[in-house]
Length: 239
Image 1 (cartoon, rainbow, N blue to C red):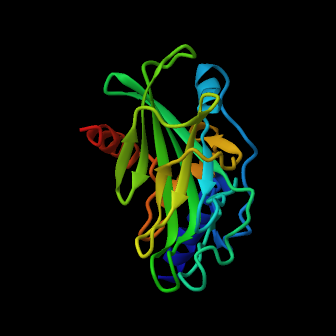
Image 2: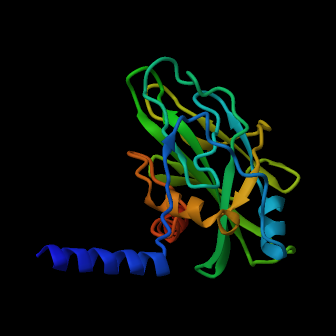
């Protein structure tokens, strides 16, 4: 038995030496320790469109956007629903994530933000928050026309064909009307902006982390399993 065990151990050691295992180590870290990506988009038309329609986001109450993931795949741990609605989350460089595809005869660009909590008041809401806007274009072209816009609201979408703009960039807001949780809204106020990183420009480790991480009551809206589901919801909201 000892000889057999020795032989198996020696064989395993030989195999792992010849074919070393590559393990990616990811961690959950403090919400304000996540390092954002620099603004990065692909070259060509897709990248140009990402930047052309990049929204301005006005935070009326609650947390400002934070980066959710960093290059090595570490993700933010969020915040408990204690204290004021913007407690420990009122300042950050932030991050806005983009992903695009042709869908239902149109071209869709989704822009998404992460906040460490969604808490209208202490004890209400939940740890982690994801919200987004879908910009619908007539085609994947720099000369395309905008068809409509859809902002996320409690698992569904609110729609506008003519929101306010700054240039070509839509103006959206983030707010809660107590005691209801936060949602995206259309606004005439010009808010802030964050470094934009495209889904296809993220590192493999970051995409894997966004795909696999459990954000509790919040769900990454642009990962493979949710992206087209949310685009369909945005279309359905047009009635």
